[in-house]
Length: 176
Image (cartoon, rainbow, N blue to C red; front, side, top):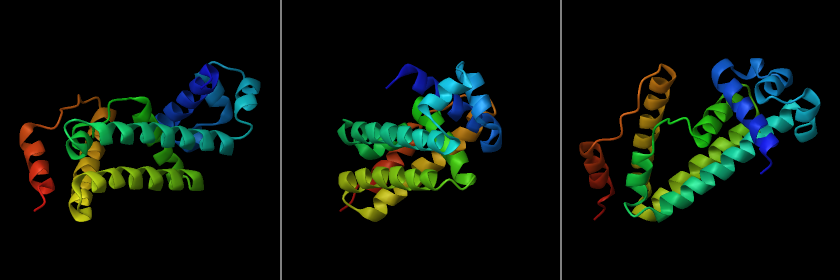
């Protein structure tokens, strides 16, 4: 991907996360990205196209995460729980940015969020072999992420899941 395009998407995600959709204007995005408004418009001719670009980025980053999850030596469930925290990664920033776009009613954001959620669940179902157990693991991970996200926004450091929590996940996934 093009470095300028990446900087623009990073700036958009940052503004969405910190200030919300209404403040993430094309002018503000260009300023934060360090490009002219014309440079931004070259890559993204409208705010809708910019939103589409962030949704595409989220879908790509989440697909890469699903591939890692499926290949994880510890198993998909443990991987999902272990990585369910906000660490400020490009994936994290894209998730928060797209969530803000969802709140503002962007259809592409709603579709992207549904897709990545379904893809993570599908990987868990494939690994565990039981949809209910997979949903339980996903909901635990989603809850951890939600909790860590708000802690991170308040400046708290992430605490990785402890062995006791991972043991609970092991019990959930130990299907007879």
